[in-house]
Length: 221
Image 1: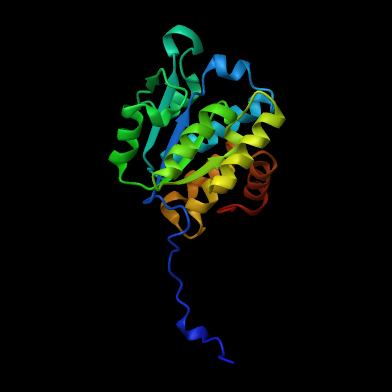
Image 2 (image 1 turned 135 degrees about the vertical axis):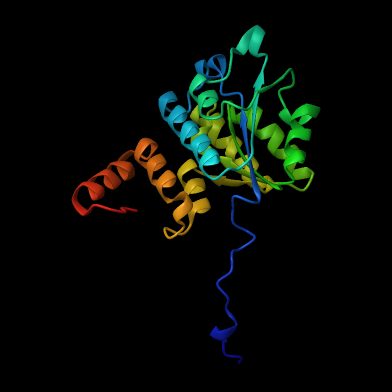
């Protein structure tokens, strides 16, 4: 029996984890008409998670792609608060339900050189499933942000997530993505931005940071 040699273990970043250097965020169809049909979760909760995710991309300088479908004729413009977080990005408007069948979307993702796609959008059972399966088929890794996405019903949302997981996608939450990118509270360049995002969008966890700051002062993370 061979003993485990702890001296061979090195504390190096794992390539399996999301980092600011290997990820790209793709936001799909966070639009009024799509929100009207969401029944899988409280719509405001999905908005909150989506904005937390967008601010995460901005804080860590991770490239992002915004997409809409039929913005001028049916679905309306992208969520105004989402656009406000990423004001320099012009949404790519499509006619296709599958964003991966729109050449402009695929080229925007390819241009980043990133292979890990952090994907969120409406609806889970159509506009997330289809590009997820397509991107996985082309060798990308897809991380589906479940709470920043929604379907027409809980059943539709849950079954869609299961289908994607079965195909190899990784289900995550917006807060999980934020903390995976930060990973070390000693990472000072993004510490304040991370805790500010948590305070604004992290619910009870955010309140806890406010509380700790009030009574402990200084860093509270």
